[in-house]
Image (cartoon, rainbow, N blue to C red; front, top):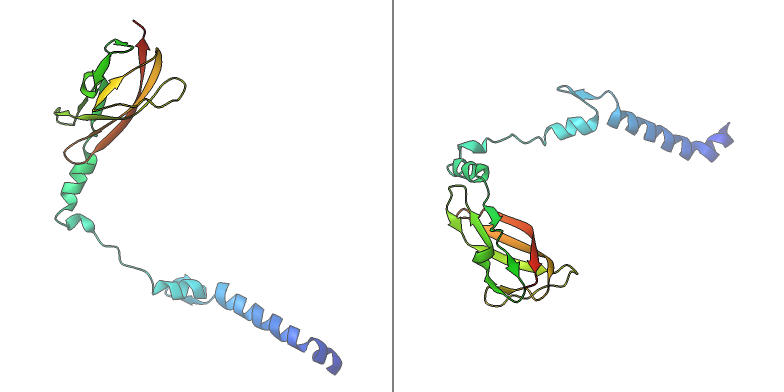
Length: 156
């Protein structure tokens, strides 16, 4: 028996300590309704929830967040190749109050996926096909709308 304890004594003690620690961590240790040492120790780390709705700017932020984003529309005018268009001639944008906003066409691709370069805010479609235009509008409260339009371009 002594020989068994000499050979396996360290292992038995390690297993007993492990089982006791397991019971201590996940066992029936309770304090103020929390069971287990992790829950008991974690109770002291709970943070009180603050009500931020009483801050001065929170009502303004809520109003801005509930406000509708700008709406961008395509004017649906006939577009022909080799004609030069201003960005405002193709698209219009309105904010929630109905005020007109500036639009920015920040990317144009032809039907193959090649990017069309615009110069000085002017757009010229070289070939017939369906072009995809990425348009952005920003209102006074920095509400941003980005939208993709498919524009058919016809040959003259």
